[in-house]
Length: 128
Image 1 (cartoon, rainbow, N blue to C red):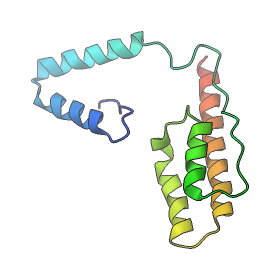
Image 2 (cartoon, rainbow, N blue to C red):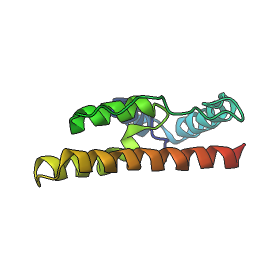
Image 3 (cartoon, rainbow, N blue to C red):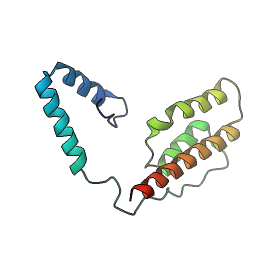
Image 4 (spheres, helix red, strand yellow):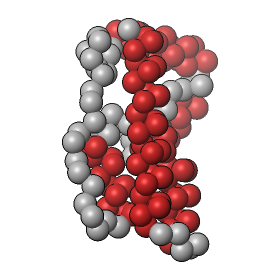
């Protein structure tokens, strides 16, 4: 299976999958070997031993859920937001459709992002 690319709309991944499907078996093997080479030779996302700290963005007293999501994305730029999309949208739905208080939802969003950051940092430190 091909790795998932980090495009916001998935168009890169879709294009790559479509192109891959059109190749003959020999060319598919060549492409896979080339991607293995690129992955092996690429520089790590963060320098060894250094995992970025979250940005210090203070939560305003009055904040909408949408603005909180934007603030948290800016606070934790190292997090791939696609990984949190399902949970984030569930919390947004709980606020908009079910009437949950914005402050409660924002508290949960903050915890969600903080937990995901802690997990990423732990994985990074284990791989160093």
